[in-house]
Length: 139
Ligand code: CMP
Image (cartoon, rainbow, N blue to C red; front, side):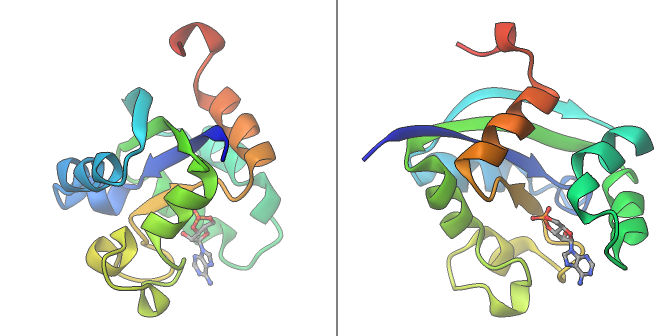
């Protein structure tokens, strides 16, 4: 097994609902280490750049509106197979399909307001970490 880093966002819906602490507790409870963390209110260009891969999707405008409506908590998580471990902990993108015990089952409202984001591959984890955290902030 390999130690990996992945990138997480606790989204505006979860921050508004005071679920940051509960979600961080689930992350730590799953054995993932928080290596860097910051609260930030994304600008539209920041959100559009982060989700550029989705820019042709019909929900892109709605996604950017949502992600910029309030602060988010961005973090770098480290652990064994962190990319898959965090995606498993998050549960399915649509909370209606999320397993019991996952973050989205517990805290997500719907496929748009789904509480958390996690990188979908090791390669994207590297890109997403670099987008928010300059190297000097990471040990
Ligand atoms: P995330 O893991 O952050 O990656 C892309 C995001 O787009 C996803 O979580 C959802 O928040 C959002 N998304 C995906 N599909 C839809 C959809 N059908 N309608 C609205 N938002 C969506």
